[in-house]
Image 1 (spheres, rainbow, N blue to C red):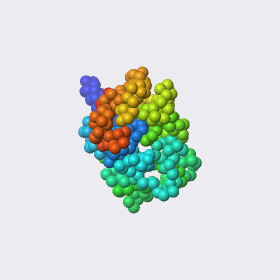
Image 2: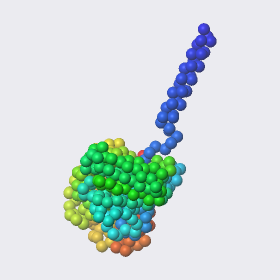
Image 3: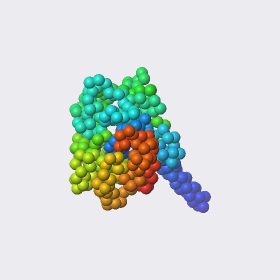
Image 4: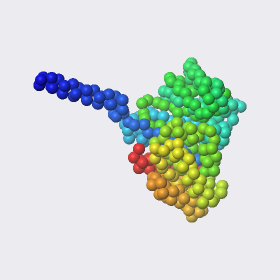
Length: 345
C-alpha cells in the first residue's frame, strides 16, 4: 500500500512538473515582452529640417535605447517605414513613389499613404516586413517584390489589410490596385517596434479628420500599442491660436485613439519655443498639454521647459531656427526615453 502511495505521489509530482514546463514553453517568460510604441506628432517628430536619416529621428533613437536596455541590438526589432514624408525640407527619403502616384493621407487617414503607383523602400539590414495596404473593395491585388521574390495578396474585403514578406533583399517594392499605407520592417529577434506616424504641418484638426477616415484607427488597433506618444500644438498655435479649441481637440484625439487601444499607456509632449515666437503666448498654449497630462496622470516630454532655444543652442536647430538637426533629435530622445520609462512598460 505504501508503495502505491509513493507511486501516486511521484506521478503527481511529475504531472505538476510537466504542467509547469508546458506553461513555460507556452508563455516563454525568458523572452522580453513586446513593446510597441506609436508616435502621433508633427514635424518635431517626423524629421523635417536637417536630420540625415529616419533612424536619427527621436522616436527611432528612443527605440534603440529601449532595445539596449533589454540587451538587444539597437538595429533589431521593428521600424515603421512610411510611404512618403510631407514636404521637401528633409535630409532623407524613406521611400520612393513612382511617377503618377498621389498622396492618399487625407483619403485613408494614415500619414504618408500613397496611391496610384508603386512605392519602393531601401530595406538593407532588415530581414522581413509586414506590408499594410488599404483596399476599396474585395479582390484588389497587391504585389510585393524584393530581389527575385514576389509575394501576391488579394484583399478579401474593403478595408485595411496586411501581409508578410520574408527574406528581404536591399529593396522592397509594393504596388497594387489600392493604397500603399506603409511597412513595418523587422530585423533580428528584437521585441521593440516603433511606429512613428508623425506628419509635418499637422494640427489637431488634421488628426481629427484622419481619425474619421477608414484606415488610421484600424491600423492603431492592429498595432496593439503599449505606449502612445501624443505631441501636437505648434501648428494649432500658428493656424488658429485658440486655447479652448486646442484643448478640446487634444482630448478628442486621446479619447478616440484610447477607445481602440485601451491597454496603452500615454505620454504627452510639449514643444520648444521657436525662434521669433513670443514666448509667453507659446508657453500658455503648451500649458494646455501639461494640464491634460496631469489629468491623465501621464508622463510628459516637456520640451517647452527643457529644450533651449536656437539662440542658446544653435546646434540643435536647422537653418530656419524652428526645425531640428540630428543633435536636436538626440536631445529630445534623452528626455523622451525617460518619459516612456515612467510608464513602466
